[in-house]
Length: 567
Image (cartoon, rainbow, N blue to C red; front, side, top):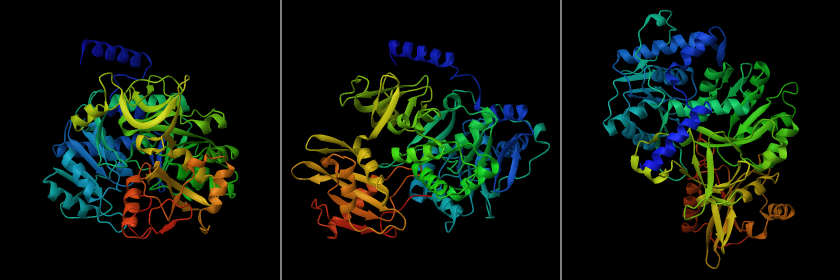
């Protein structure tokens, strides 16, 4: 690093400290402090079981002591491969408490991805469930460990018994306070490695510091106003960063309560929000849509969640307007694993018209600039690739070469997203770099077309791709999922709707595919490379000649090669 770059980094660090975003607080001591402040206050409700902050701290301390007794220490990786359970939270907090590194992994990953992840992080301890549905998770992990040659010194199992695997200690050990544990890691140490659920490539391991994670939570608290009386209803995976922040770290900082679901269930969310006085939830746009559908149908007329942040993929403005009409302050959020979570959010008091046009406003202390193809920063309001510099930025990937590719000498991270930053720091995302269709030199953002498609009542989900066209280079190809109970009669009525909302003629799809579901990542992004591969296979098999005809339709069912949303 050059002297000027070092001086710039030092100045930014001083600014982050002045803003209260960077402190020396160790994330491994967060639970101890919370238990001392709110010992008998309820922390969490999960499937009828309630835990106070004191009870959680004792359980975490007990599991931490068991890890230490098995030889797990500072910097060792503890891989947590679980659906939403109490143990998925306890194991991560126990790793932090003893200075180990938590590696939560979403269970949608199968053996192919897990071999890559295990070979990369080489866990010293592994926590998984005996099974999930028809899958034997332990059997899968044993094959992965055999294939990679990795031999954890500790193997824990939840909800089952398998030889060679020990149960996670369940007793909330009353003598836990007497057990000596090592000091947790420093604020700048890596506390978590998260593997990105990318839409086009193998998972990448992002190393997050405790300081970066807490910078995110401090900003969330200030901008969204989390306080002691809030009740967070969380159905997002706690092995995913946004789920863990809201189900665990935000409560430990603010003292609020959490209602945790094993997985998202809109019916259960609505019922539990009324029962427990839920004030906030979050997740992908389809979660919000399902909840709004229920409220509009008359469910829970006496009580509704008041705040919802939608992220992971594009949230249609018309959906936010529907939520606002119900009294729900719903807004978009934008962030990513490499930034320790959300870095842009719509504040709760934002007018609906403003919320419908932007992902949100940049968190204090963070910087976002749009750059052209040469890497030159563009004036406010210009469309370009978004680069972000933030106190929340990861330490780096587990592969230093990847870090060098995506973080420049000035500390800006290349997001691969295309958007606009206005003069007041409001951000609009128009899609990925590869989510721009180049039609005869005209740049058509996929997001704009997808929102127009889902504004048609008969279309529940939509994704568009640019597909080759000899004369113009690319044309618009649409993949649509009809609304439940609505028969697909052809694209003609949808085209009429698109014309009625004044969508530019060039943006109207000329090739249509009708699907039962879109393939999704855990964070709600459409796996467009799978759509592209399925389309190419369809063409090669002769089911569709690929010529751009408005009437051409291929019906796909979810039991073929393109899967639906991952659970």
